[in-house]
Length: 223
Image 1 (spheres, rainbow, N blue to C red):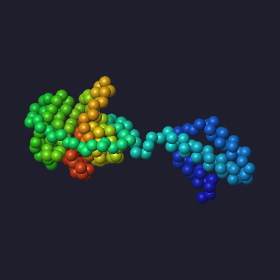
Image 2 (image 1 turned 180 degrees about the vertical axis):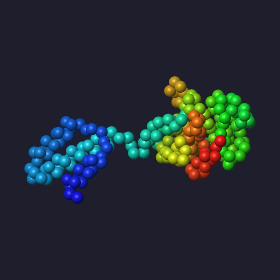
Image 3 (image 1 turned 90 degrees about the vertical axis):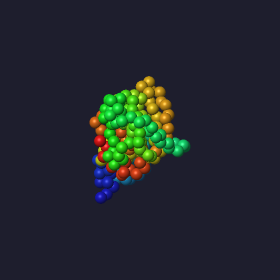
Image 4 (image 1 turned 180 degrees about the horizontal axis):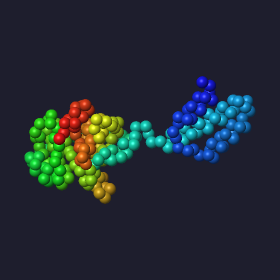
């Protein structure tokens, strides 16, 4: 394949926004005045026009790691990428309340889910629209997506979509923030690896399980 064919194929496969016609015309005018053979000049005109299209597309596109999912809400959780990682170590508050699951359901307004593999929880707490269930070293929070305040996860490392669930895996420490209905943010703590998923209008946060595959298995066994 010659240069013309290669450039033509590349141009057909590129999916980018439109470029500034004035900038393109200016560059092509400069190229037209260059003292080179016509065939070579035509090739450079094509190459530079395509190059400008690709550059414009790169400028208009967010950073590679900032995928669409990272900028949208995940149920009652918003994922927000930040430039630096937390400087303090993650903490995991234990769930000390001694409610029964039936009492938690009455207070929260929905039936809380429990991973079958973990057995009976050591602690259960609840408030309207919210339930926290705990085991040794594991915390499972669940809440209605429309509950205010909203959780905001400010993370530095990667965000991985979990195709087995309607959720995402935060693989490293990240800041956990509460955003009030007024837009005011209140920093809660630094959280460790967390699996977040949504099921039947309820958002789940499973924290304290560092192994992604085990966290997914626990989530799949939550009922």
